[in-house]
Length: 178
Image (cartoon, rainbow, N blue to C red; front, side, top):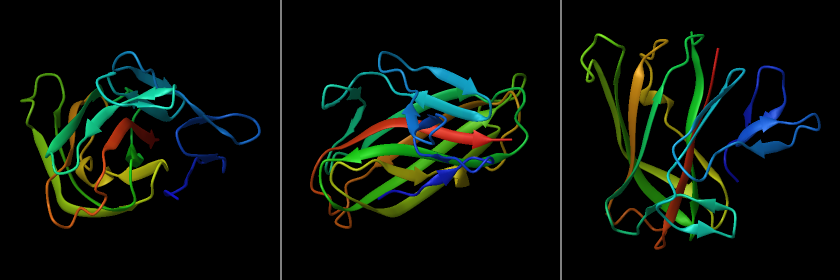
């Protein structure tokens, strides 16, 4: 099972806003890239350009040995001061180790779009068939500031270390901040 993230108030949250019983509710839109700022939780969905999971979700396909990408773009809310965590949520079509990389470029209005560039390469993430996997990408967003415009690329590359041997679907970017 993927990592469990907890809001400041102690309610477990995995993919959105928790209801009164502590059950996570999906807040991603399937029909286009969409930003929601709900208190201190941010959810950014992906366009419907890939696999349908059940009858409910679409995402971006990260093919086995395809060197494929999922792209996210968003603006950091004006009340942002500190990033608590940031994850990309994927659902693998097999179990094993997925080799992935992620890269960011960001800056604010009046700055060059490449003011900040950060990368994580050659990461192996243990994944399980059909389970939501929340992969921590916080390490490429360490210099965020309110108002920054962010581009994030999540990549699954073709490497012998990737043992999933199946399609992986990227569903969304999810973050929490203060």
